[in-house]
Length: 78
Image: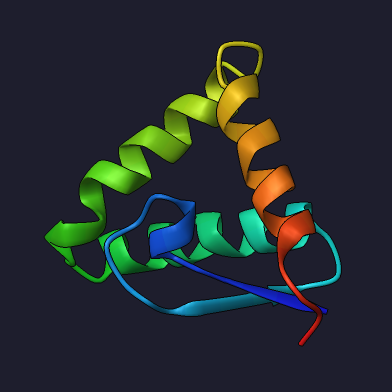
């Protein structure tokens, strides 16, 4: 298991996301951004908009995805 923060994934805070794979933490980040914006947290709005754009245009966002996967792979296990 590894840990990445919201900030490491492009968000504004240091909430930790834990997962066995990069996809686990990316999906956790997506849920976190949705919940934060729904709760009225405007600081997370821009990151949420970027994440929504990535899901809608996966080919264009492949660079971010590959960079996130590399960063995850480079982390030590928890």
